[in-house]
Image 1 (cartoon, rainbow, N blue to C red):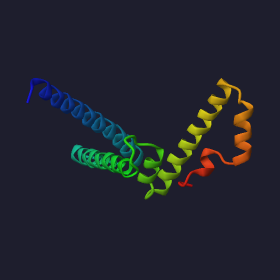
Image 2: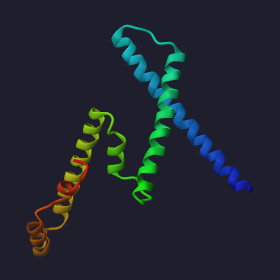
Image 3: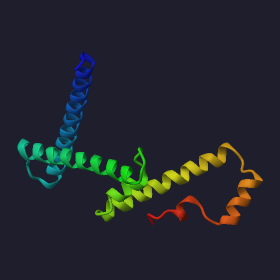
Image 4: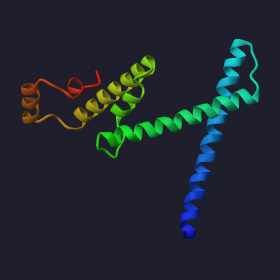
Length: 139
């Protein structure tokens, strides 16, 4: 291996350690807020266990998202992959779906504001009667 290969591995390791530290810190903050609200105390070991479990779940999510995209013969993960990932948690699935719909609406409004529709695009919309959201199989 070249020195460059070791640099990449060291860089990835450093990024991983920073992400894990950020996750632990965030877990600690949330745990302290909830413990204070519920008037209980949590040991550092409990917080560390929660953070490690969360880290493992995030790794599994990343692998699943990659596999969903690969199965669809894509190299890019998209919103449908995330919706598929959240299918077992109805609340999370609904939240993600609502955020995606709001994003698409905002994107469409921005597009309309940038350039007026041509007669050709209006007639195409009228003739098909479908927009992107109605054609989605995730609804």
